[in-house]
Each structure stands twice: as structure tokens, then as C-alpha cells.
Length: 194
Image (cartoon, rainbow, N blue to C red; front, side, top):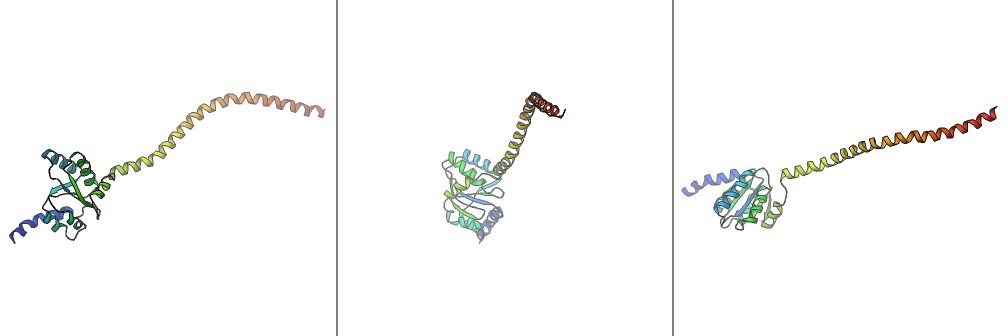
């Protein structure tokens, strides 16, 4: 009984971390060097992701009754969890990118916004851009038509100013022959009237 009571604060800590979490990713980080582990933790911390190694039995107890209980089957061997409260895809993106240079890092599985993904599924989740990237792309696509419209108006104004000058010069030359053409038409009209 004393062991269970000693472990309860750790279970409570895990429960507090996963409560209201957008995603939890389970990894096997065996074989990472101290430098690699330090770099990985730094990248995750900068993205607002909590990363910690816990005993599998304690994680299973903490996950009971939550969406993260779906991870019980992958909690074998050494496991660490990366928990994100804000950006649901951040742990998958960072861990996947880091695993490309650190071959000893293995993503086991994860739960993102209530949905379970195996290792292949997590690779797909990792390819989803961050919220900031999506917002900047949206803003860019919204600004693009406005910017293009402004360019077109500017070009029309520049061409219109240049087009008006030759038209103004050409107009008097065109009006002169028209006036001459009208003058003979008037003379015959006056001649029969006399």
C-alpha cells in the first residue's frame, strides 16, 4: 500500500498534464545521446510542449477514463510522452523532424484531438502545418487579390496618363479634317437657298 501512495502524486502529475491536452505522443527515446536529448527537450519546450519520461504503469493509470487510454497498447518498453495543450500537431512535427537526424528516436503512436494514430499516422500528422503557418497562408491568399487589384489599378493609371496625352494630341488633328469636311457640306446648302 505504501508504494501505491508514493506513486499517486506521479499519476496525479501525469493526469494534470494530459487534462485538456490537444495531443499526446508516445516515443521511445532509447539510445539518444545526452546532447540529442537536451536539444530535443529544448525544441519541444520552445513550442510549448511538455516532454517527460514516466513508467508505463503510471501512464496507464493516469490515462484511464480519457481519450489517451487508447495508447495503453503501445506503452511497452521505455516510453516518454510529449504533451501539447495548444498546437495539437506540434509534438508530432518536432519529434518527426528530430527523428530524421536522431535515428534512435522512435515515435510509437499518439492521440491528437481524441483520435488515435499509429506511427505512420503520426507521420501524416507531422506534415500538417502549424496554426501560425496556416493563418499566414490564409492571410497571404486573402491579400493576394487585393494586391493584384491595386497593381492593375496602378498600371491602368500609368497607362491611362500616357494614353491620354497621345489621344489629346491626335484629337485636334482629327478634328481639323472633320471641320473641313463639314464646311463644304454647309456651302452647298447655302448655295441653293440663294
